[in-house]
Image (cartoon, rainbow, N blue to C red; front, side):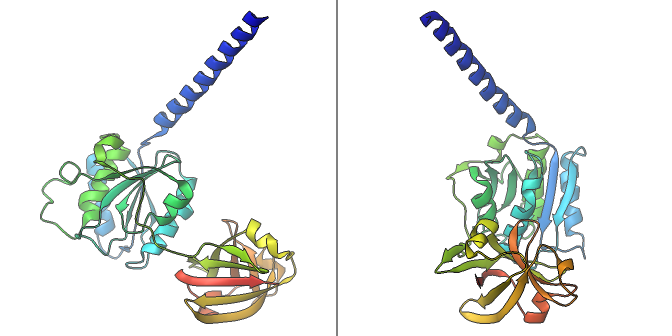
Length: 308
């Protein structure tokens, strides 16, 4: 009987070891998958984005290169942070992201590559861009880019285009497996520069949150209040929600909106509260812009209070 139990124990141990090994092999095989995704505040009016892609293709023409967006408002590091976390979870493990919103280019801010616990890589200045990615996807490791080894050849006298000379070049080398993650540069502590903001909460019958971003095309106002937190209000579909919006200490909007699943449930021009594709509470107007009508915008200083 004891021998039978011992055999079962050994079998379970071997199965567990195999499972762990397969998981590690799966993670390794998916790492650095030749996919490269670019984001910047450059816009598309000139050749900056094309130059970055050209550098990447010069490293390896086998790369698969995609754009996240190049319409981040100039110098808006917070929005760059949000767009990354809005998008990155939907990309395969091993995808390498380049984010260049870098008002401090050429200064002492670090150039880093973050590996998240989900297995995604982010190549960017460490200036707050990684705030939400680090928080929601986790920090596995952070490395500072060694610009002696990982910089475009003959670019040392260029101080204002690290997106082309350092980030695109390093990211392409990483995505194409020209270098390993360890070869990016020295390992840093598992922490990044973070932009402070108020976390959502439920207090005294009210839900408080921030307005991190707008649904720009339609003028809808997106918050960071998830359904679990919102449901503590006890408000059901079809009922009204009292809303207050602040920019810092200044109250910008006070009103009541109807809680709906979709815009088609109300007449054109009606204000609504709904949950967006990320399942966060949002404000909108059927066939119009809530942001434009009420002058409500977004960023780490913008907050919202919901109540019955």
